Image (tube, rainbow, N blue to C red; front, side):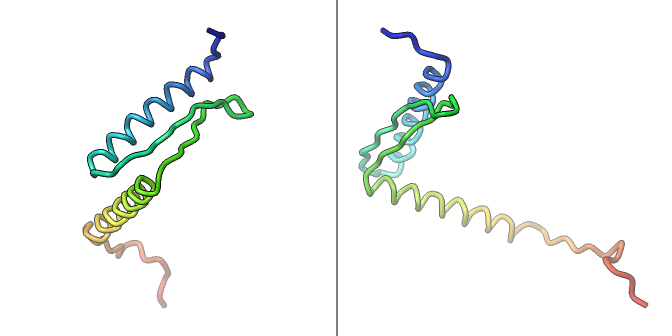
Length: 93
């Protein structure tokens, strides 16, 4: 087995962990998964991954992102509204 650099090992761990978590997230939502996460080291020496997935997985991720965005917006809107009354932004004469 050839020697692996630290970046190679990091890329392998990153790809493995990402695949495990994405697979779990998609399985929880009943999405049929065709998921491939490939490790590589980019030109700058950083551990990186390439992700390939089927349409069902991609659409589920997009829906998940939108759901997160909606929840964040909802929390901001439901937060107590704070009005700044002092000091005034501009002096009135």
